[in-house]
Length: 576
Ligand code: ADP
Ligand code: ZN
Image (cartoon, rainbow, N blue to C red; front, top):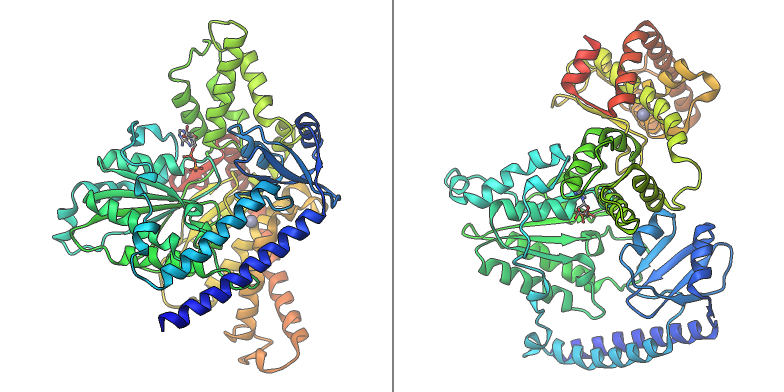
């Protein structure tokens, strides 16, 4: 049996090496063009760079838009390069160089492969491989020198509130276990980069006074099978020894990505690592109080296995800050900086729309550098202005402020339409939040409309759902005119269409289509006609209701333009 495994892995590895070798030969036949760093930066500013492969090497390779040539330039190895690239819409590939592999790296990798080859053969023949593979869990930064608390996380009020009980659990596990409560084992924090997910995880550990172990999902995905899984086990062993702990896994998507079609079998390692993680998490016994907090920018790409109950069943969005949150982040990071008295923090909050917490922090930092360089005692408005352009440098050459002002109005009316229609057509639902700050899914803004939980929906409720979905577009048309409606309604139209199809073809609610399961007739055009009629009728009704309530629509939209987000009570006050 063990022998058989050996042979299989030997064959697998041999073919891997062959593939690898083939790939490097191919790579080398395309020789790379070296460009100096200054020209690289110029190209970057001109928006000509398509992708960059970031490594810790002395050079990095990149690709120019509409150009097949592989280029390399010196790697400045500075912090913040990745963010700068991302802000300029450049695709960033991390870890390995995709287009050019330096010869030394190639040789090293080959040696490495040869090593791995020998090694896996030994490992699969079980025995004492473990000690070799043991992951030094001290790699995971634990015992932070700096302690963080929720006071360090400005804004993010909703996320903090929904994580409060995790802290309580870590502090007083007995309280929960004596009540037989099943405590969450895993929490996923999701949201754009730099919004404070790591900070939040550190703050949870800090508040609860437990050790913090941080790793990145990409650390676990290794070249050869079994190592990642071992690292996971070592990490958990270490955390368990502390009794109570927070394990933080950044970039969880690196090991828990949805299985795609064309990964050609190379997923063994990732699957094993993922399985080890899930096994460790379900293996927590009652005496162990270890909470795993994972972070990702893209929750929609996560493997469903991670999201099942008993695993990462708590999901908390950490979104981009709205005006009020930006103000508190600004104030927080300005605390130990000599801001000139005439600097208007509220105005800065207004200007930093779409900034993440990390960008705001960076912004103030750049401003203090500018002020120090100029030998000024305080950070003045001109420092802030310089810093602002440094942060946005080339992110978008057009004036962000101007386009934002225009888009803000459109988004505000779009979302106000959803909110108002929600209030009118779905009075039993709770509209918990409405905002014009984009969410992770990329929509311009969003309006959270939560229906009460029930088994069935009535015909009226389905029609109301369609109307609420169409109300964003209807409001845009009402306020800006038929020809100025935007693409912002794409998700709304998808939703309305799928409800309409079910309404007509499955629920037998359309009078003219009758009680028939339309799917059993091959002809889809009849269905399309029926849906069209239904949606047109509901759109006209939506339009009529918004027109009738125009004053309320304006009030909500104006409040959104001013405050960017509204909660349930604020919305209630506006429509009362
Ligand atoms: P993420 O993990 O979401 O990518 P981080 O937690 O690493 O973001 O944030 C990077 C830095 O940005 C933090 O160390 C902090 O200085 C700043 N920052 C981000 N969000 C906030 C916030 N809500 N309040 C205060 N500072 C923040
Ligand atoms: Zn919408």
